[in-house]
Length: 310
Image 1 (cartoon, helix red, strand yellow):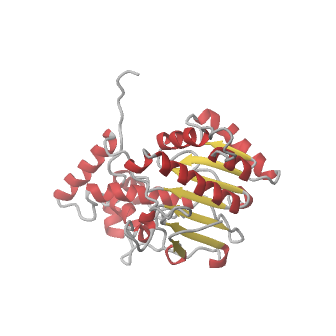
Image 2 (cartoon, rainbow, N blue to C red; image 1 turned 90 degrees about the vertical axis):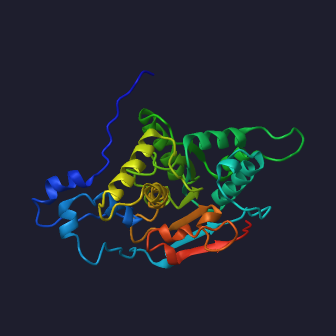
Image 3 (cartoon, rainbow, N blue to C red; image 1 turned 30 degrees about the vertical axis):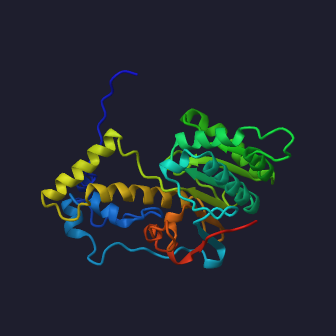
């Protein structure tokens, strides 16, 4: 590919002003805006936002579902070995980590009925996991590959396509498998096509599995430029602007909240939300207490465990 020119809006507040100054009231509402401090920072350059935003800050309402309709769990250790479950760059390169992760996910797939969405940090990680899980086990061992276990748990295993043209066929395969009662699993990526814009109601999504903490690619030119921009604006005295490093971290937490939002679509819905990474736990050697960045209604529902078995 040849050279490309890209333009990225560093301050959405500039565009926000073009209509906010003409409106009596502007309501910004969504189920997946958390963490809300990031939204305020993005709108900080807006004169309308600075002068007219409600003084008490943003409102975070409770979910319409009852607590007994949802299970939220943070898994800090692998069920079998009890080794810490942390999706770092180093661990993704370890075959034993990828293998244990696959076994854990297949166990969850067997437990959760209907459709299950499983999100990975990137296409590269997803491709590496699928390649490892599809690798045949030794002849005569009698053991099943991870991929065979996944296929045994669900009627269809669908991978999120990189091309938008292939999305309708992938979605159809997923929906058809759920409709006939065999369930389906979709292996997707955060910020991808399956994490937003599609509504997985009822049996189409009885569970969401979030693998790792999806920090953006630190060397991506756009990410580098945005971090520098925020730091420059903050140094210039712009109130409310997040530091570049802080903005970078919050992008990961927002992506997870967005993925979790694929489940629980109406007041009668129910499902399971599983965070597969010790950094979401509130205690333990690898804990970073990241659950405080989840949507407010989710935080008190998170259950933690060092080892599970099915």
